Image (cartoon, one colour):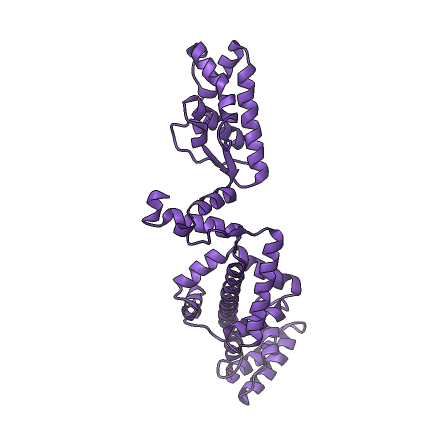
Length: 384
Protein backbone atom coordinates (compact mmCIF):
# COMPACT_ATOMS: atom_id res chain seq x y z
CA UNK A 1 0.00 0.00 0.00
CA UNK A 2 1.38 3.43 -0.97
CA UNK A 3 1.97 5.74 2.01
CA UNK A 4 0.92 9.31 0.99
CA UNK A 5 3.00 10.81 3.81
CA UNK A 6 6.12 9.10 2.52
CA UNK A 7 5.39 10.37 -1.01
CA UNK A 8 4.92 13.95 0.26
CA UNK A 9 8.14 13.69 2.28
CA UNK A 10 10.18 12.72 -0.78
CA UNK A 11 12.55 15.68 -1.43
CA UNK A 12 12.79 14.75 -5.12
CA UNK A 13 9.23 15.93 -5.78
CA UNK A 14 7.22 19.11 -5.23
CA UNK A 15 4.14 18.45 -3.12
CA UNK A 16 1.11 20.38 -1.93
CA UNK A 17 -0.50 18.82 1.13
CA UNK A 18 -3.90 19.61 2.60
CA UNK A 19 -5.12 17.68 5.63
CA UNK A 20 -7.07 18.02 8.86
CA UNK A 21 -5.51 19.06 12.15
CA UNK A 22 -3.63 16.26 13.89
CA UNK A 23 -3.28 14.15 10.74
CA UNK A 24 0.51 14.43 10.52
CA UNK A 25 1.35 17.48 8.39
CA UNK A 26 4.17 18.55 10.72
CA UNK A 27 5.59 15.01 10.79
CA UNK A 28 5.58 14.98 6.99
CA UNK A 29 7.54 18.24 6.90
CA UNK A 30 10.06 16.96 9.44
CA UNK A 31 10.49 13.72 7.49
CA UNK A 32 11.05 15.76 4.32
CA UNK A 33 13.77 17.85 6.00
CA UNK A 34 15.38 14.71 7.42
CA UNK A 35 15.43 13.08 3.97
CA UNK A 36 16.94 16.23 2.45
CA UNK A 37 19.73 16.06 5.02
CA UNK A 38 20.23 12.34 4.36
CA UNK A 39 20.49 13.14 0.64
CA UNK A 40 23.36 15.51 1.35
CA UNK A 41 21.62 18.92 1.41
CA UNK A 42 23.49 21.48 3.51
CA UNK A 43 21.41 22.43 6.62
CA UNK A 44 21.83 26.15 5.90
CA UNK A 45 20.20 25.76 2.46
CA UNK A 46 16.90 24.40 3.85
CA UNK A 47 14.11 26.82 4.72
CA UNK A 48 10.96 25.87 6.65
CA UNK A 49 8.28 28.54 6.87
CA UNK A 50 5.28 28.30 9.18
CA UNK A 51 2.71 30.77 10.46
CA UNK A 52 3.24 31.01 14.22
CA UNK A 53 6.29 31.12 16.47
CA UNK A 54 4.85 28.22 18.46
CA UNK A 55 4.62 26.06 15.33
CA UNK A 56 8.18 26.96 14.31
CA UNK A 57 9.51 26.08 17.77
CA UNK A 58 7.60 22.79 17.81
CA UNK A 59 8.89 21.84 14.35
CA UNK A 60 12.49 22.57 15.36
CA UNK A 61 12.12 20.63 18.61
CA UNK A 62 10.74 17.57 16.86
CA UNK A 63 13.42 17.68 14.16
CA UNK A 64 16.21 17.84 16.75
CA UNK A 65 14.55 15.01 18.69
CA UNK A 66 14.58 12.89 15.51
CA UNK A 67 18.19 13.66 14.60
CA UNK A 68 19.33 13.36 18.19
CA UNK A 69 17.67 9.96 18.45
CA UNK A 70 19.54 8.76 15.38
CA UNK A 71 22.89 9.76 16.88
CA UNK A 72 22.54 7.31 19.79
CA UNK A 73 20.54 4.42 18.27
CA UNK A 74 22.08 0.98 17.82
CA UNK A 75 22.81 -0.05 14.24
CA UNK A 76 19.81 -2.37 13.86
CA UNK A 77 17.30 0.16 15.18
CA UNK A 78 18.75 2.98 13.08
CA UNK A 79 18.61 0.85 9.91
CA UNK A 80 14.93 0.13 10.56
CA UNK A 81 14.16 3.81 11.23
CA UNK A 82 15.90 4.96 8.05
CA UNK A 83 14.25 2.20 5.99
CA UNK A 84 10.79 3.24 7.24
CA UNK A 85 11.54 6.88 6.51
CA UNK A 86 12.83 6.43 2.96
CA UNK A 87 10.97 3.26 1.95
CA UNK A 88 14.18 1.36 1.20
CA UNK A 89 15.36 -2.13 2.19
CA UNK A 90 16.88 -2.42 5.66
CA UNK A 91 20.01 -4.07 4.31
CA UNK A 92 20.64 -1.09 1.99
CA UNK A 93 22.27 0.92 4.79
CA UNK A 94 25.94 0.14 5.38
CA UNK A 95 28.13 1.49 8.19
CA UNK A 96 29.04 4.59 6.17
CA UNK A 97 25.36 5.47 5.67
CA UNK A 98 24.69 4.97 9.40
CA UNK A 99 27.65 7.18 10.31
CA UNK A 100 26.38 9.96 8.05
CA UNK A 101 22.91 9.74 9.62
CA UNK A 102 24.37 9.91 13.15
CA UNK A 103 26.45 12.97 12.21
CA UNK A 104 23.42 14.97 11.04
CA UNK A 105 22.50 16.05 14.57
CA UNK A 106 25.91 17.66 15.09
CA UNK A 107 25.82 19.25 11.62
CA UNK A 108 22.42 20.79 12.37
CA UNK A 109 23.61 22.15 15.71
CA UNK A 110 26.75 23.63 14.17
CA UNK A 111 24.94 25.34 11.27
CA UNK A 112 25.67 29.11 11.35
CA UNK A 113 22.53 30.86 12.48
CA UNK A 114 20.86 27.52 13.16
CA UNK A 115 18.30 25.70 11.03
CA UNK A 116 16.03 28.10 9.18
CA UNK A 117 12.69 27.15 10.70
CA UNK A 118 10.82 30.43 11.08
CA UNK A 119 7.50 32.19 10.68
CA UNK A 120 6.40 33.68 7.38
CA UNK A 121 6.66 37.15 8.92
CA UNK A 122 10.20 36.57 10.19
CA UNK A 123 11.23 35.33 6.74
CA UNK A 124 9.68 38.35 5.03
CA UNK A 125 11.27 40.78 7.49
CA UNK A 126 14.71 39.25 6.92
CA UNK A 127 14.32 39.47 3.15
CA UNK A 128 13.11 43.08 3.23
CA UNK A 129 15.97 44.14 5.49
CA UNK A 130 18.42 42.58 3.06
CA UNK A 131 16.86 44.28 0.00
CA UNK A 132 15.14 47.46 1.30
CA UNK A 133 15.80 49.60 -1.78
CA UNK A 134 14.47 46.96 -4.15
CA UNK A 135 11.39 46.54 -1.94
CA UNK A 136 10.81 50.29 -1.60
CA UNK A 137 10.96 50.31 2.21
CA UNK A 138 13.02 52.32 4.65
CA UNK A 139 16.25 50.47 5.55
CA UNK A 140 15.55 51.18 9.21
CA UNK A 141 11.89 50.16 9.24
CA UNK A 142 10.35 48.81 12.43
CA UNK A 143 7.77 46.04 12.65
CA UNK A 144 4.76 47.13 14.66
CA UNK A 145 3.91 45.25 17.81
CA UNK A 146 0.33 45.02 19.08
CA UNK A 147 0.53 48.30 21.01
CA UNK A 148 1.95 50.23 18.06
CA UNK A 149 -0.62 48.68 15.70
CA UNK A 150 -3.46 49.72 18.02
CA UNK A 151 -2.07 53.28 18.20
CA UNK A 152 -1.80 53.57 14.41
CA UNK A 153 -5.33 52.18 13.95
CA UNK A 154 -6.73 54.63 16.50
CA UNK A 155 -5.00 57.58 14.86
CA UNK A 156 -6.27 56.49 11.43
CA UNK A 157 -9.87 56.26 12.66
CA UNK A 158 -9.65 59.72 14.18
CA UNK A 159 -8.26 61.04 10.90
CA UNK A 160 -11.23 59.58 9.00
CA UNK A 161 -13.64 61.08 11.54
CA UNK A 162 -12.04 64.51 11.10
CA UNK A 163 -12.26 64.15 7.33
CA UNK A 164 -15.95 63.20 7.56
CA UNK A 165 -16.78 66.14 9.82
CA UNK A 166 -14.87 68.63 7.70
CA UNK A 167 -16.16 67.45 4.32
CA UNK A 168 -19.60 67.26 2.74
CA UNK A 169 -18.53 64.64 0.20
CA UNK A 170 -18.78 60.85 -0.12
CA UNK A 171 -16.69 60.11 2.98
CA UNK A 172 -19.00 62.24 5.13
CA UNK A 173 -22.07 60.47 3.68
CA UNK A 174 -20.55 57.03 4.27
CA UNK A 175 -19.47 57.89 7.81
CA UNK A 176 -22.92 59.24 8.64
CA UNK A 177 -24.59 56.12 7.22
CA UNK A 178 -22.65 53.57 9.26
CA UNK A 179 -22.18 55.58 12.45
CA UNK A 180 -25.99 55.61 12.73
CA UNK A 181 -26.78 52.16 11.31
CA UNK A 182 -24.21 50.27 13.44
CA UNK A 183 -23.65 50.12 17.18
CA UNK A 184 -20.27 51.31 18.49
CA UNK A 185 -18.74 47.83 18.66
CA UNK A 186 -19.80 46.89 15.13
CA UNK A 187 -18.61 50.25 13.83
CA UNK A 188 -15.13 49.62 15.27
CA UNK A 189 -15.12 46.04 13.97
CA UNK A 190 -15.84 47.35 10.50
CA UNK A 191 -12.62 49.40 10.55
CA UNK A 192 -10.70 46.37 11.82
CA UNK A 193 -12.04 44.41 8.83
CA UNK A 194 -10.89 47.20 6.51
CA UNK A 195 -7.44 46.94 8.03
CA UNK A 196 -7.05 43.19 7.53
CA UNK A 197 -8.40 43.27 3.97
CA UNK A 198 -6.87 46.51 2.81
CA UNK A 199 -4.81 44.97 0.00
CA UNK A 200 -7.87 43.26 -1.51
CA UNK A 201 -9.95 46.42 -1.07
CA UNK A 202 -7.34 48.60 -2.77
CA UNK A 203 -7.01 46.13 -5.65
CA UNK A 204 -10.79 45.96 -6.16
CA UNK A 205 -11.19 49.74 -6.16
CA UNK A 206 -8.35 50.02 -8.67
CA UNK A 207 -10.03 47.42 -10.90
CA UNK A 208 -13.22 49.49 -10.78
CA UNK A 209 -11.36 52.52 -12.09
CA UNK A 210 -10.93 54.20 -8.72
CA UNK A 211 -13.57 55.74 -6.48
CA UNK A 212 -15.15 57.50 -9.47
CA UNK A 213 -15.86 54.18 -11.16
CA UNK A 214 -17.03 52.45 -8.01
CA UNK A 215 -20.78 53.32 -8.17
CA UNK A 216 -21.17 52.00 -11.69
CA UNK A 217 -19.22 48.82 -11.00
CA UNK A 218 -21.13 48.06 -7.80
CA UNK A 219 -24.49 48.78 -9.42
CA UNK A 220 -23.65 46.43 -12.28
CA UNK A 221 -22.55 43.74 -9.83
CA UNK A 222 -25.95 44.06 -8.12
CA UNK A 223 -27.79 43.75 -11.44
CA UNK A 224 -28.81 47.42 -11.59
CA UNK A 225 -28.47 49.92 -14.47
CA UNK A 226 -27.02 52.42 -11.98
CA UNK A 227 -27.31 53.45 -8.34
CA UNK A 228 -31.03 53.78 -7.61
CA UNK A 229 -32.83 55.37 -4.67
CA UNK A 230 -34.32 52.29 -2.92
CA UNK A 231 -37.07 54.26 -1.21
CA UNK A 232 -38.04 55.90 -4.49
CA UNK A 233 -38.25 52.46 -6.14
CA UNK A 234 -40.65 51.21 -3.46
CA UNK A 235 -42.68 54.42 -3.38
CA UNK A 236 -43.16 54.33 -7.15
CA UNK A 237 -44.33 50.71 -7.04
CA UNK A 238 -46.83 51.46 -4.24
CA UNK A 239 -48.25 54.70 -5.67
CA UNK A 240 -50.37 55.76 -8.66
CA UNK A 241 -50.13 55.25 -11.58
CA UNK A 242 -48.58 51.87 -10.68
CA UNK A 243 -51.51 51.41 -8.27
CA UNK A 244 -54.53 51.26 -10.61
CA UNK A 245 -57.61 52.69 -8.87
CA UNK A 246 -60.12 50.85 -11.10
CA UNK A 247 -58.41 47.49 -10.67
CA UNK A 248 -58.22 47.87 -6.90
CA UNK A 249 -61.90 48.86 -6.81
CA UNK A 250 -62.80 45.63 -8.65
CA UNK A 251 -60.66 43.70 -6.17
CA UNK A 252 -62.45 45.35 -3.24
CA UNK A 253 -65.87 44.37 -4.57
CA UNK A 254 -64.81 40.77 -5.23
CA UNK A 255 -63.11 40.29 -1.84
CA UNK A 256 -66.26 41.38 0.02
CA UNK A 257 -67.94 38.19 -1.26
CA UNK A 258 -65.32 35.96 0.34
CA UNK A 259 -64.56 34.82 3.88
CA UNK A 260 -65.58 37.05 6.79
CA UNK A 261 -62.24 36.47 8.55
CA UNK A 262 -59.80 37.36 5.76
CA UNK A 263 -61.31 38.36 2.42
CA UNK A 264 -63.87 40.86 3.70
CA UNK A 265 -61.37 42.85 5.82
CA UNK A 266 -58.97 42.85 2.86
CA UNK A 267 -61.82 44.09 0.67
CA UNK A 268 -62.33 47.08 2.95
CA UNK A 269 -58.59 47.84 2.81
CA UNK A 270 -58.63 47.47 -0.99
CA UNK A 271 -61.49 50.00 -1.18
CA UNK A 272 -59.39 52.51 0.76
CA UNK A 273 -56.44 51.87 -1.58
CA UNK A 274 -58.71 52.46 -4.61
CA UNK A 275 -60.19 55.69 -3.22
CA UNK A 276 -56.73 57.06 -2.38
CA UNK A 277 -55.38 56.09 -5.83
CA UNK A 278 -58.32 57.89 -7.48
CA UNK A 279 -57.17 61.06 -5.68
CA UNK A 280 -53.57 60.46 -6.76
CA UNK A 281 -52.56 59.39 -3.26
CA UNK A 282 -50.90 56.19 -1.99
CA UNK A 283 -51.68 53.87 0.92
CA UNK A 284 -48.60 51.62 0.95
CA UNK A 285 -49.29 50.19 4.41
CA UNK A 286 -52.69 48.87 3.27
CA UNK A 287 -51.30 47.36 0.05
CA UNK A 288 -48.61 45.59 2.07
CA UNK A 289 -51.15 44.33 4.60
CA UNK A 290 -53.33 42.83 1.85
CA UNK A 291 -50.56 41.13 -0.12
CA UNK A 292 -47.82 40.43 2.43
CA UNK A 293 -47.36 39.12 5.96
CA UNK A 294 -45.92 41.25 8.75
CA UNK A 295 -42.54 39.66 7.97
CA UNK A 296 -42.80 40.78 4.35
CA UNK A 297 -43.54 37.34 2.89
CA UNK A 298 -46.17 36.98 0.12
CA UNK A 299 -49.49 35.75 1.50
CA UNK A 300 -52.38 33.89 -0.17
CA UNK A 301 -54.36 36.57 -1.98
CA UNK A 302 -57.82 34.96 -1.67
CA UNK A 303 -58.99 32.76 1.19
CA UNK A 304 -62.09 31.23 -0.44
CA UNK A 305 -63.41 30.20 -3.87
CA UNK A 306 -66.25 32.72 -3.58
CA UNK A 307 -63.84 35.42 -4.74
CA UNK A 308 -63.72 35.90 -8.53
CA UNK A 309 -60.74 33.81 -9.82
CA UNK A 310 -59.82 36.59 -12.25
CA UNK A 311 -59.47 39.00 -9.34
CA UNK A 312 -57.39 36.47 -7.39
CA UNK A 313 -55.12 36.06 -10.42
CA UNK A 314 -54.76 39.84 -10.74
CA UNK A 315 -53.89 40.19 -7.04
CA UNK A 316 -51.21 37.50 -7.49
CA UNK A 317 -49.79 39.40 -10.47
CA UNK A 318 -49.80 42.60 -8.40
CA UNK A 319 -48.02 40.74 -5.61
CA UNK A 320 -45.37 39.49 -8.04
CA UNK A 321 -44.90 43.01 -9.44
CA UNK A 322 -44.31 44.37 -5.97
CA UNK A 323 -41.98 41.49 -5.08
CA UNK A 324 -39.83 42.40 -8.09
CA UNK A 325 -39.84 46.06 -7.06
CA UNK A 326 -38.85 45.14 -3.50
CA UNK A 327 -36.03 42.96 -4.81
CA UNK A 328 -34.77 45.88 -6.88
CA UNK A 329 -34.98 48.17 -3.84
CA UNK A 330 -33.09 45.63 -1.74
CA UNK A 331 -30.38 45.36 -4.40
CA UNK A 332 -30.18 49.17 -4.46
CA UNK A 333 -29.69 49.25 -0.68
CA UNK A 334 -26.94 46.65 -0.94
CA UNK A 335 -25.29 48.65 -3.72
CA UNK A 336 -25.40 51.90 -1.76
CA UNK A 337 -24.08 50.28 1.41
CA UNK A 338 -21.29 48.61 -0.57
CA UNK A 339 -20.28 51.91 -2.14
CA UNK A 340 -20.40 53.59 1.26
CA UNK A 341 -18.34 50.81 2.86
CA UNK A 342 -15.66 50.84 0.16
CA UNK A 343 -15.52 54.66 0.18
CA UNK A 344 -14.96 54.60 3.93
CA UNK A 345 -12.48 51.75 3.57
CA UNK A 346 -10.44 53.69 1.00
CA UNK A 347 -10.30 56.72 3.31
CA UNK A 348 -9.30 54.55 6.27
CA UNK A 349 -6.63 52.63 4.37
CA UNK A 350 -5.12 55.90 3.15
CA UNK A 351 -5.10 57.29 6.69
CA UNK A 352 -3.70 54.04 8.10
CA UNK A 353 -0.86 53.99 5.57
CA UNK A 354 -0.09 57.65 6.27
CA UNK A 355 0.15 56.97 10.01
CA UNK A 356 2.48 54.03 9.39
CA UNK A 357 4.75 56.09 7.17
CA UNK A 358 4.83 58.82 9.79
CA UNK A 359 5.89 56.26 12.38
CA UNK A 360 8.33 54.49 10.01
CA UNK A 361 6.73 51.11 10.67
CA UNK A 362 5.35 48.09 8.81
CA UNK A 363 2.75 45.66 10.07
CA UNK A 364 2.58 41.92 9.44
CA UNK A 365 0.39 42.32 6.35
CA UNK A 366 2.89 44.80 4.90
CA UNK A 367 5.71 42.31 5.35
CA UNK A 368 3.91 39.71 3.24
CA UNK A 369 2.60 42.14 0.60
CA UNK A 370 5.94 43.86 0.07
CA UNK A 371 7.80 40.55 -0.05
CA UNK A 372 5.38 39.23 -2.70
CA UNK A 373 5.89 42.40 -4.73
CA UNK A 374 9.66 42.16 -4.30
CA UNK A 375 9.81 38.57 -5.53
CA UNK A 376 7.50 39.30 -8.45
CA UNK A 377 9.15 42.51 -9.64
CA UNK A 378 11.48 42.66 -12.60
CA UNK A 379 14.44 42.95 -12.86
CA UNK A 380 15.03 43.03 -9.09
CA UNK A 381 13.64 39.53 -8.57
CA UNK A 382 16.46 38.13 -10.72
CA UNK A 383 19.10 38.87 -8.08
CA UNK A 384 16.89 38.88 -4.97
